[in-house]
Length: 421
Image 1 (cartoon, helix red, strand yellow):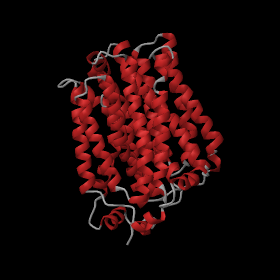
Image 2 (cartoon, rainbow, N blue to C red):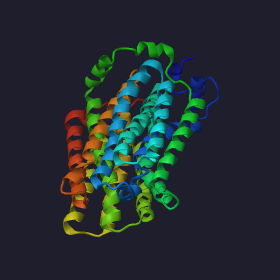
Image 3 (cartoon, rainbow, N blue to C red):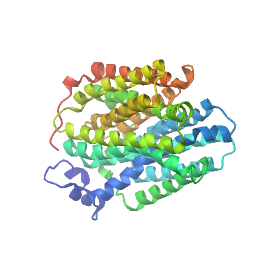
Image 4 (spheres, rainbow, N blue to C red):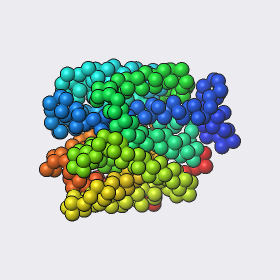
């Protein structure tokens, strides 16, 4: 029986749905772990090398701005890759696109590991991002292929936890790696992680998009986009997500220079900052998922986005008053926690009404997130140089724009409640 035929039956267990889809026993924990690896590939690619920014600048005789451009190139690669892989996976299935894209990630990682110039690093970082993009698209699309309603909320929350936690854990791991290797060793590790993900995807994951549905989804890409463009809630959620993503990417891009250069943190102490942030993100993601059992996702965002504005204002205050590192740490902890809280809400709003084109829906959202986030992550450097103050201006501004999009475009009171399953 096709997976889609059972995905909305409340009496069918998650394990049974996965077994039907795979044609063999497939434990939900294993399924989530593999999808988690796929999802984590992008954030790890983005952020594992953050503690090495000053080292790359010195080793390749380049500038702070050029090092930050490598992060921007990755974000743009993630966006473009999602735009390609998402619609492609709607048409031919999930497994082939994700396997090919992950292979590109591995090759790009190897190129960076031996790159002699910052320009080659930036070019290959685009390829890395493009290759990692498949994970973000396919993991979300596979979940939407199989699940709906509140079961979708639960599964999306677990993936959002991993995708939200990965950017915070990655710098911790990267900082510890620098005790044993140089910045190039980080990219050798990313290549190995890519190989591991490729193997797991090939062996473990089933094809979740049946041929019958696949044939039905082979409309022109423009037709699929037109369906999404007519959904006001979807468009609003994408805009809100882009602003939240811009805030977190700006922080991730600026934080090594703020905590290491301004406050004198070592690479390992910098990693501890992210460890503290990770705790808040972990708690916030789970709280968000539980609250969605009682409240609309859009209503929860009405609380989260003002808190994000407060985080940005905190950075601005620290910059103006020349506050100590502990105040900057407090503002960053709030920022990361709100990022984690928003993730499950946005995922559900984006996916809930678009099962037939979930790959395209996730791809467009990811493309907008990555491009907007990648471009805005350069703003702190352009506003007179990377500083706590310039970071705060970008975070607060992004949060305000996100709140405007939520209230005017999404209109939370008009969004219907989720079904039971």
